[in-house]
Amino acid sequence: MEIVARERRGPILTPSSIPCLRSLPTINITQGCSLGCTYCYIKSYRDYPGPDRVVLFTNTAALVAEELKRKRKRPERVYFSPSSDAFQYLAEVQQATYETMRALLDAGVEVAFLTKGFVTDRFLGLFEKHAHLVHAQVGLTSLDHTIWRTLEPRTSPPDHRVQTMRALVSIKLRVTARLDPLIPDVTDASPAVDSLLEAISASGVTFAAASYMFLRPAFAKILASTLKRLQPDQQPEEWSYQEFTDGRSGGQSIGEQERRERFARLADIGRQYGITVSPCRCKNPGLADGSCHIAGSVHRPTSIAVQPDLPFA
Ligand code: SF4
Image (tube, rainbow, N blue to C red):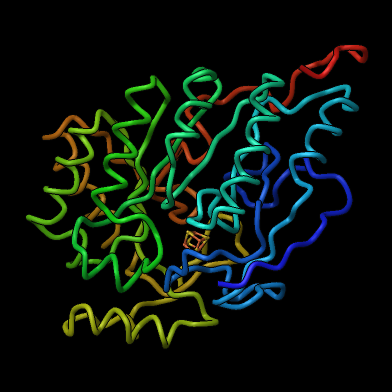
């Protein structure tokens, strides 16, 4: 994996355009992502650097620290990372993430993240010191290693992600799981999904957001053939185009009624293990009205007033 170091310019703590995250600033530590999920939507972005390269912004932590010093209103919470994973296995990325999150947490700003990556002991130490400020969501759809290798080849292994949930819960963080993207009759089938929810429950997590696979137009064909390799009965080419809440993006997926039934079944299974399973609202307009907690568990105002002369801690 090639790492291209680059300096970031301009303001960094600005709101996201992603509907679920519109109310708070988001930070990408890298442009591109080394974890290489086969279904990842960033591959269709104009500035995607390619599968074997990430652009690492080397001055993110410094910019965050400067902006927090200057801002009259600090953001209450910052989300990592809408178009990359903050916990990629690359040491340089881990270091940049650590410094950036530490700058925020030391200043009293909450940090929320969704990851399929590697949350090391160093981060656990940092998060433990600021447990009340950290919201974690860990993505996991299957405990099966063939599925993991096929769909998410460079992410943290499934059992390791369950351990990550357990470790984060043990230091008193608010931790949720994300079952996304589920594949009908593969990752949502019994007994696989029962084992998955049982393992998540044993880690101490009690909430899981869920969503099904969407084939984005830019790489629908290649992803459809990957799904057929996993299970020859799959017929993703027959899925119809479904719009997300933003009305601008979407992809081919199973129909709304079928998703409704499958979510209801997942919710029933989740209940057996003490887990609330709730559909992701952004991708399932008409099916969900709650929050999938992608950016933390509590809705609060987007910013808090900061005295102009308050020193940056
Ligand atoms: S971890 Fe997220 S951003 Fe990275 S490749 Fe996978 S889906 Fe894309």
